[in-house]
Image (cartoon, rainbow, N blue to C red; front, side, top):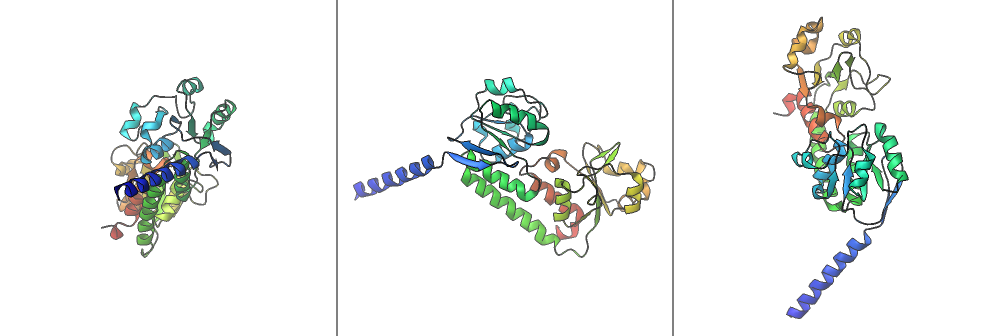
Length: 296
């Protein structure tokens, strides 16, 4: 009987090892439509963006991360990793010296860096989601190409559940408050269509007064702000250092409905601007600002 159990155990282990072996090579499309092939499970991963670093650590892949950007400050363990340059200008020579078998970058300002690394024959996956749902898709794909598919599915399920809890609660709200998000104050900048903030405000049960702007991060005139007269103002911590209600000292701001009713709040820049798992935390915080009666 013991021999039979032992044999079954060996068969199960062999089957598991076979499944793992069959998992690679993997060919996927990244968030900008590039097709990349990962021939074997990566053991040395470099992240060039804070959002990517947060995803990798959330997936339990921290030990495989050998390099991060100087901007990568979360979680705490990420600070101890080798630095490969700034977010805007990763150091190609430094990246090569760390001998990565996978680099995960982002789009936008890193496009040229991605092209250079691609020419050197190193697999580069670009994580560049546009919405909260896209973030979860990116997490799934990163988990798959890094050999952490189960962790990615578990994390994705948890994030979807938390999003659903928020959206189901705010669906019960009697009205949607008008919201102004202050990205920066000199000049006054907000977040419009195509930004994560616009997506978060909508999902949190609010109306983004910059939602019809012509760009994702528009300059917003004081005249526009006074005309819209938002019910709630939320600002990035970098723009609203100190007490958020200090904005009442700005000329004419004390006449705004949000200021009069003391409905001015601030939120940590990192959690609201980075396309990683903490965006869901940002959603939860914004929803509580907009509908405190639903989140007692």
